[in-house]
Amino acid sequence: MCGIIGYLGSKNAVPVLLDGLKKLEYRGYDSAGVAVIRDNKIQVRRVKGKIRDLVESLKASPLEGSCGLGHTRWATHGRPSEENAHPHRDCSGTLVVVHNGIIENYLPLKEELIREGHVFRTETDTEVIAHLIEKHFKGSLEEAVMMAIRELEGAYAVAAMSVRDPDKIVAAKTGPPAVVGLGEGEFFISSDINPILGYTPRVVFLEDNEMAVLERQGVRFLDFQGTPLSKTVDHLSWNPIMIEKKGFKHFMLKEIFEQPQVIRDTLEGRISQGSGKVYLDETGLSPRATKSIERVLIIACGTSYHAGLAGKYFIESLAQVPVSVEYASEYRYHDLLLDPRTLVVVISQSGETADTLAALRAIKKAGGLTLAISNVVNSTIPREAERALYTHAGPEIGVAATKTFSAQLAALALLALYLAQAKGRSDEGTFSPLIQDLLRVPHKLERILTEARRLEDLAQRFLAFSHFLYLGRWVSFPVALEGALKLKEISYLHAEGYAGGEMKHGPIALIDEDMPTLAVVPKDRAYEKMLSNISEIKARSGHILALAFEDDTEIVNYADEVIRVPACSPLWSPFLTVVPLQLFAYHIAAKRGADVDQPRNLAKSVTVE
Ligand code: F6R
Image 1: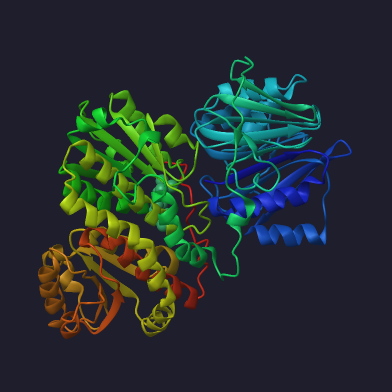
Image 2: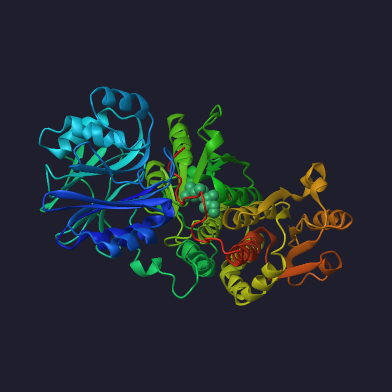
C-alpha cells in the first residue's frame, strides 16, 4: 500500500511526479514526498498529510530536476510524520529510495547497520534499504541495489537514485506491483499504470525478482542475479480521461453513475443477444474442461468477497454446481482440500491484494485449477492464475469499490451461464428470459440513477443515526453486507450486514428506535420470510427502510419508507438493489463532510498481509 513513482526524461520531474502521486493517492495518503537530482545534489521535500499539502509546499519553495522519485504513504512501520515520509536517504544524503511493501527482517538489519556505524533518522523499515545500498555501493547503483535486496526478506517494490551514479533510476520488485513506462526520451516507474497513461501507452510490467534500470538512452531489465531479460512491451487501452471527475463532486459518485455502462462493457462480446450463448473463450476454459467441473471455490476479500457470495447463488441456481466462498485472508490457513474437478475463482479488482495473492499461490501449489476475475489487465493475480476473466470497469479511483462490484457481478453471471451451458443445464425455455433480463439490467439501472436525488433526501433524514442494520436473504444477503460495508468505510458510522434469518439469533437485541434497518426485499423466494423479519423489527420499535421492486404493492404495509427499483428476475436483483445502498452511503458520508474518495485508514489496493 503506498504508491511509488519515478521519472527520468527531459522535463522538470516535479510536476510529473506530483501529477502521478495524485493518481496514486488512493494507495495511501498520510504523508508524501519527492526527491530530484540537480547540480549533483539530491533535494528532498516531504510533508505529513496529503498530496495537496506537498503541492503547496513545493509552490512556496519549488524544486527542479529531470530525474526524480515520489511517494505517497500508508503507514505500516512508524507513524505518519514528515521524518517517516519517503523518499528516505542514506547517511551521506547522496542516495534516496522509495518503497511500497514491508521489510520483515528490518530490525536485525537495522541493528547490524547501526553497529557498522550507519545513522538512522526514521522509524521506518524502508530506511534500511537506503543504508544497505550505501553499504554495497562501489560505483554502480544497480549492483548495489542487487546486493542490498538479496539481504531483504518481505515484500517490496523499490526505486532508488544516487548522485554518485547519476541519470539513472533503479527499480526492483518482489510482491507489490511495479510498471515501467516507455515514452519518447522519457521513462517512468510506477505502482500502477494511471500516472503513465497521459504520457505513453507503452508499458512493461515487472515480475517478481526483476529489476529495471532506467537511463537516458533507454531501460534495461535484469533478474536479481544481473542476467539481462527481454520483456514484452504492452500497449495500454485505458485513457487519461477515464480518471477525471467529469463534473461529479467525487470519483465515487462518478463511478456509481458509470455502472450501467460498465455492466454493458463487461457483458459485451461475451453473450449473444440472439442465441443467448455465452462465449468465454478468452479465458481458455474449454466447454469440455468446464463440463467436468464439479465444485467451485471462490476466494476474495472485502467487496470482491461480497460479489463472490452473490456469484455463489448465480452458479448454484443456474449451473447446479455447489459453490463455497471464502475470505482469502482466512483461506490461506485452511487445509487445502482441492481436487482437479474444483474450479477456484479468485476475485480481485486490483489484481494485487496481498491476501488474495497469497491464497492463490497456495492453491496453485496444491494443484487447483484457478481462474482470476480482475479489472486490471496484467496485474499480478490474473497473471499468476491459470485463466483470467477481465471486468471492463475502467480505472476505479474512489477507494470504496462501486462500479467494480457491478462489473464483478456481471462477470460472475457470465461464468454461471457458461457453466450451465457447458453442463447442458441451459434449456432455452428458462434461460432465454433470464438472459434477456440480464441484458436489460443496464437500462434498469439508468432508471434508478435518474431518481438518485431521492436518495440524497433520504440520507438527509437519516443523518442523525449512528447505527444501522442491513438485512437480506439469499441473493440479497451479500447486498446487505455490501451496503453496510459502504456505509461504514466512507461515513465511519456503525453498520452491520446480516442474513435476515440470523437476526433473531442475536442482533435483534440491538433493535430500538435509534437503530434503523435497511431491508433488501426484492420479490424472490425469501420475500415472505423477509416480511416476517420486518414485522419482528417493527414490533420492537425499529424503523424500516425497505428496498423493493416497483410492482410490490404489499411492502408499504410493512416498511416505514420504501425505495423502489425496477422489477427483474430475482437472481439479478443484486445489480439493482446495491445501487441505492451505494448512493445512500455516499450521501450520508458527503453530508457528514467525510473524505469520500479517500476514507481514513484505508487504501485502495491492500498489498500488505
Ligand atoms: C471496499 C473495498 C475493499 C476491497 C478489498 C479487495 O470498498 O474496496 O474491501 O474490495 O480490499 O480488493 P481487491 O478487489 O482489489 O482485491
